[in-house]
Length: 331
Image (cartoon, rainbow, N blue to C red):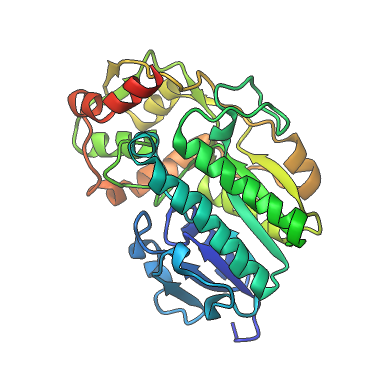
């Protein structure tokens, strides 16, 4: 690769999905500027690119970036994953979530506009749909259930507004249930994969919410990254797409693939029985489709299970304490 290779800025590029995005871009011959303050991301997620001069990590907060920032100079695309997640912390710290996920997005839009990028792709969340009918299309009514969902939706609205008012070429992708190697290991109680993998390493039972028949539209991280690159390279703009596998899997099926005993914990308010992305639009518009089956993806995760060795270990008692705010707010 040379300095003439096209440049892409990936915010949150040291995080789970962002690091998969960096991998794909490097494979495709791009230079990559990663903007990640490592609040949720990990420098180790980019360690395999440490000797590559075409991958640059900048650890500033996205809200500190001003229009004209050198990191964005000459960028062809900006892919914006940076933000903070998880339900319970968003209920406890709503101002922080709105600041990072909305105002931070505005800062990125302004930096991208100043740089004259050819496309800004926003990582939206399927949580904007709330308790949705399934399969869920992009035209489904929106009903965010908690501040995280609201902040991600308002970030999307900002991106589409910049497209409308400033003619910034923007597309948005609403991610359903992404999983894969390098998924989060933060201290917050959250995604089922991180919880279960640490429990398996510790020889503890999987804490299955409710009866475990709830289904999630799990999509492997590299498939998510491929959708974002397609959304950047297309001539289409001002579009919103769902991205998921379109084949929901039950929590019990995940347990079966991981292998181990279970213990049941109470079902939580505001959580859907099923998430299921209707991916008709993205398949038609971008020619994208999932490539990694659920069984293949879980197999890859198990091959790399040591990644979760330092993750927090959750038990029924600690989960009850961590989710008390959730029950109080949404019950």
